[in-house]
Length: 262
Image 1 (cartoon, one colour):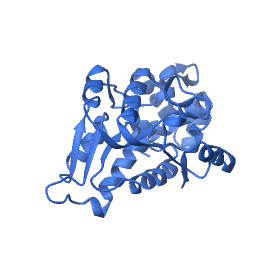
Image 2 (image 1 turned 180 degrees about the vertical axis):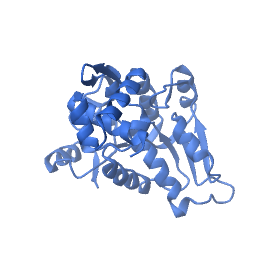
Image 3 (image 1 turned 30 degrees about the horizontal axis):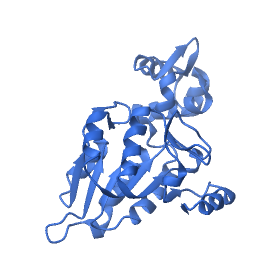
Image 4 (image 1 turned 90 degrees about the horizontal axis):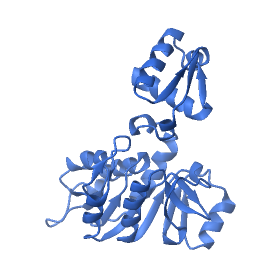
């Protein structure tokens, strides 16, 4: 197991349990206690956890792990969701993508679609507008896509650009479809994310789009994150996994939202 993989597993365990002891972590990962002690020390230096006598506890920022440490959480569900979202987008569309692990997988699924391998008559196969630096970097090497980056100030954990510079670009363009990754999806409170600056950019993406798709795994249902993006009335499609209860899906459909469980 590589150090990167081991650290990712440790952080995910810490998010699940809230605290870890050296011996239990070593047993869970199949490595020595000395290795875990070194890992805890190095992760504490990065402020990803708080070192304690005999173990570690969750640091406040661990609720939002850096993107590179979140990619494997519910990976199978996110892959299915992202592929289903990508299939909903038609050639020639102008698509807005927020940052996040699921939307990053949507971008990869779009890049893999054979029918988007090239544009037609000088037009791009897709125009992708994003505030996520990692998504822009992955797609910019594909000449069939036109990539528009919003500008703004980069958040080092999510690679997203936020702030008034991003607002300035988004207020001047129109989107066919906005695809949002969210941290919370609550029937009463709507969709939300952890940070108010991200919520502001996501809200503007929704306002500029004819259609809004939320890509979120079923664990987000009922979650109310700190910063509200908007009400469910502004959404057109929810793509999630089969963990979403049938009753919840029916209630959302009654509210006018198309629900796809994959």
